[in-house]
Every structure is written in C-alpha cells, then in structure tokens.
Image (cartoon, rainbow, N blue to C red; front, top):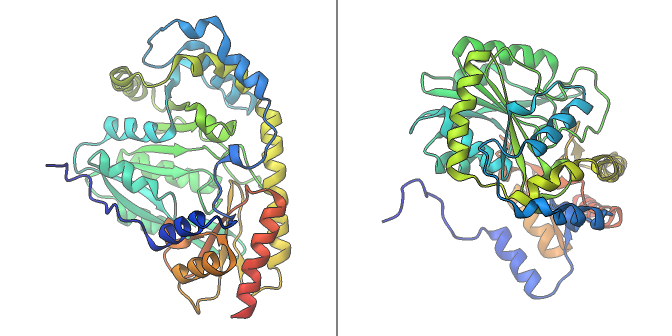
Length: 391
C-alpha cells in the first residue's frame, strides 16, 4: 500500500548498530563525523541571534511565494559583499537546500527523467531524487596528484541521454573539498548549452575555502549563459542549521529564466514552507556572518594543518582538500573500509565515515570532519594513525 519510490531498507547498518551499543554503554566516542556546528564548541552571539526573533513583525503573516523582500535583499547583499551582482527578485527562499533540490526536480523533470550528480558526493542525492520520481545518474570526479579532484568529462558525456534534464555541481564538493575550476566551468556550461540542460549548483560550503587558488570558481551566481540555479543557506553560511532557511538563486537567458521563476513561484506558493520569524531575522543574522565564519575557518584550517602534519610519515595519504568541512584519507587496503571504521569504533572509540558512504569508486578511504574541537580531533586522528601503524 506504500509508494514504490520508498525503496530503501529501514534496517540499521553495522556501524550504526555498533555506535548505538557504545552510546547505550555510556562510552566516550571521539566523533570524526561531526557536521553539526552547534555541537562543535563555537562562540555564538546568542543574545543577538535571539533578539532578532523578538521583533514585532514576526507576528504578522505575509505569504509571498519567493519569500519576504527584506530577507531576499539581505541575501542579495551577501552576494554583493562577495563580488556577485544579484537581484533580490531572482531569489526564492526555501526551508533548506534539500527542499530546494525537491523544488528544482519538480520544476525540471518528469517521472523517469534523469539528473546527473557527481560521484563521490552527498549520499542524500539518491533519496531526494527518488522521492521526486527522478532517476539519478552519476558522473565521476577523478583524483590525480598533485592536481586534486576534477570532473571526468568523458564520464559526464556518457551519462547524458535524451532523458537528462539537469547536471548537479557541488562547489566545493562534499566530501572531496574540490572547487570547480574556471576551465571546467567553461566546458561544463558549453555542454549544458549544447544539450539544453539546466545547471544546479550547491554552494553551501563556498564560504569556506581552505587554500588560495586563483583558478577556482568561488561562486557561479553570475553565470547567465545557461539556465542555472545556485543554492545555499544559513545551515553553513551562518552555522545555524536549526534556523531552516535556504535559497535558490536563478540565472540564465532572460526568457528562459523568467519562465523558470514563474513556475518556481507556483511550486513555492503551494508549500509556503519558510517561517516568518526566520525571514524577519535573516537580515540581522547575516550581519553576524564575518565573526561566525572566522571562527569556523580558523578551526577548519587548523585541523587540516594538523592532519597534514600527523599523516606526513604515516601509511595513509591525505588527499588534496580545497574547501568545505571534510577531509579524505586514503588508508591501506589490508582491510575493507567497513572493517576499518568498525574496528576504529569498537577498539579505539573513534567514529569516522567509510568512503563508500559517499560512493567513492574504490577502496579504501576514510572521510573525517574538520569541525571537531582541536583536542578531540588530535586525539581521534592519533588513535587512527596508531591503528594504521599496528597493522
């Protein structure tokens, strides 16, 4: 009696079951999967955040498909501070980037149509696409030393069929931490124009570059040669995932963009999911961006530097990471990724993600968050390296 789109097993995997046992036993776990900034020990200006929710305007409901103008203008100003000319009218507010994906799949694809997504990347894409009746097809990111991760354009072109409607780019990608380069961008937009494909760009981590690189495309907000939708939100921009505010920024050839925006109006008006208090508070919150991001960037860069130092003479290899909140370690293949993370948790009380969670094409990789407090990060990585050395 349930939809065939719900095709996943509800049974917990071995890592989740072991973690639950450890926590029931009250064991201290060093969590290298931490992605929740509100649990990572940052100093939030709590009074200023909460005061923005106390304005009298939050008690007035003003439904608007694209969201309240004040919030959209604040987001446009945020892009302006980053050197991108953006009009508030091109922005649709959503409750999250996940909802943004759902809106865009509704907008662009019929049942059975395909969207191309990078691999490795978010495991969430499979769920979002399937729940909208859309087929997700992967294209590969390939790693070379010392260049780092790049789009495999042969793989991308082979994935394109008559049913393909859009290409997803995550910039920087999660978990590889790779930014799209300008040369890749030119080639990608040319392919999308040739095949009449929309470009969906997830920029939630774009405020967190970890190294200098003049070749990277920090944002695609100004691209107009193809129909493009750029997404981000407060979850990463302000490290406020609990406030549930994201956005879709549309661009492209004027006639096509205008039609897309009108259709997005209808989709957004059907749900009206974004709460008034969050929209009213957004301008004040976005003014806190510099202080919050400075803390997070300092943490990320410090942990990445430490990780590079600790792994320099180890059997493992730190892959090049350019931005975002994660790093990838290639570990010896005497054990599978699953056995690696299970033994780490069982014997060393360290929780990490195996590469197959993100569809890495081969073994053996471990993905670690750069977000934990430095003392936790150092201890967890040290235990991981001791395990490598023992084997």
